[in-house]
Amino acid sequence: MSISLSSLILLPIWISMAQILQGGPDEKEKTTALKDLLSRIDLDELMKKDEPPLDFPDTLEGFEYAFNEKGQLRHIKTGEPFVFNYREDLHRWNQKRYEALGEIITKYVYELLEKDCNLKKISIPVDATESEPKSFIFMSEDALTNPQKLMVLIHGSGVVRAGQWARRLIINEDLDSGTQIPFIKRAMDEGYGVIVLNPNENYIEVEKPKIHVQSSSDSSDEPAEKRERKDKVSKEIKKRRDFYEKYRNPQREKETMQLYIRENGSPEEHAVYVWDHFITQSAAENVFFVAHSYGGLAFVELMIQREADVKSKVTAVALTDSVHNVWHQEAGKTIREWMRENCCNWVSSSEPLDTSVESMLPDCPRVSAGLSKMMESS
Image 1 (tube, rainbow, N blue to C red):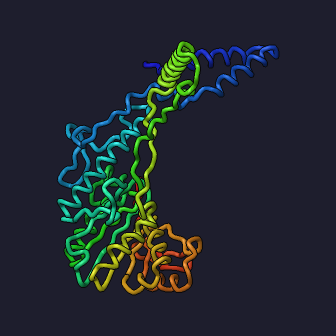
Image 2 (image 1 turned 45 degrees about the vertical axis):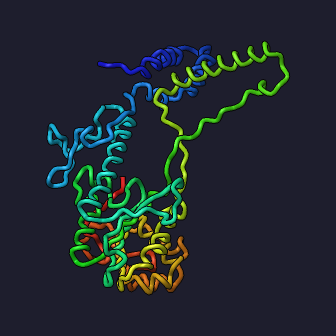
Image 3 (image 1 turned 90 degrees about the vertical axis):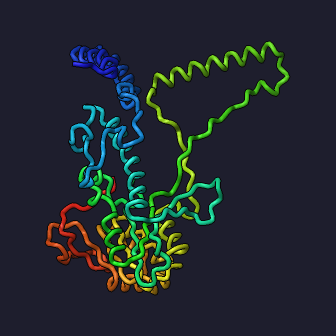
């Protein structure tokens, strides 16, 4: 049986606690001191010392996984589905591994959108400079020129990106269950142009620049000998601090900062931006939206900001487990009336498909999706 480093560090303290608790009233002061010591121990940091390095492959092959002909993720050697608990009792490490795999799958889905669905990747903002943060959406070749029909897809919140409904379903079920690809292919087969939004790609992360503090002695009139002595002490202090920090937190990840994408810093902003710069430019007489979860909220916000335009161009909206709220979002009476006529929200329910489900909100009809649990983004 292996014993972790954190257990070895804490064991003497637990033994001392037990001995003190068995003692009399005279041991109260020692108990207080030990409790104070325990309160200062960061168990999360201690657990990090037991972890293997957070160094994961950057390809599916590196993880030894691949999607089979049915679109299921399977281990290359064993043929088994993905295993989350790859290492027992290391939940944080397993979660980081899962997230690393998820990032690879996001890129894999992007490739499928381009190669399998023949969509074009369009950079935004459309007038972005070379140096500023950028995002992108995907469009079919005829998205802006199709004179009849345009389908717009909006996923929910969380880790999912363009082309995905739910990462969990992609990993644990298959590509058809967790991606928008079946929707895209059917829409294109039925003569729709297609635009796939990317509402969660709101910023890029960059490493925080290190702040170099200039020594106060540099500009002083102190003698050179005294200045050298101060610099030597300062370097020694920094060396000790760095050594302590490395010991205290060996798995510390890089500190990053977020640089938001202009006019696309939130799902709501993104929906309005794509509407203004792409959907309004389309030739389609009829525009249809499919929006899941937070995507429904983003659509309602779009309608609040562009009500007249949306009413003139959008024919119907299919929502799935939408989390919009017409009261909190302060949608006016005319918007609520339009939604009752032109929107439908399919929600999680054990009732048969399309059975009416009672709603507390005076907006669009709610009907059963025929599933007690629908898509989750994680």
